[in-house]
Amino acid sequence: MKTEQEYAADPWYKQPWLLLAMIPLVATVIAGTTFLVVSIVSSDGIVKDEYYRMARGYYSDPKKQQQAWDKAISAELKMDIITGDLTVKLSGDFTLLPKRLNADFVSPTHQKYDSQILLKQVAGQPFYIGSLNAPIIGKRYLMLSPADNNWRITASITPPYENFTVILKAEQPK
Image (cartoon, rainbow, N blue to C red):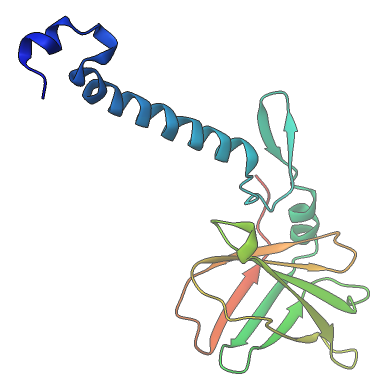
């Protein structure tokens, strides 16, 4: 075993205190590099609206909300969480009711938790039916639009979802 004098005679890079001082520095560099690589490689994928990029900002395109507002579109959605059945009663100023509706349940945190359900019209009536692919857990943004995607109405829903009913109304764009 070396004595204190022998340690003092060693060059600076062989001193034991250097390793103790370098460990936090090396750990910080490794963690920072790891987080940098993860943030560059992965994407959030959480924006599910009519946004476009202009210069350094993001702007929303309100055309679909304006179409829904002009037609005074509203819908009543009922969800049976046990069976996964969805029923929608649509109302508004329509010359011809859409044959199909898209119901998007969008997660506020990550795109992989989003689900899209196709709702089919029942015998020419303003009623539509569909079925959930998987149970819905947590807060969701509900977006209802026709197959041609020319208007959209939205609502925010939160648990509990047992025999859940939500009213979606067209909102005036900002």
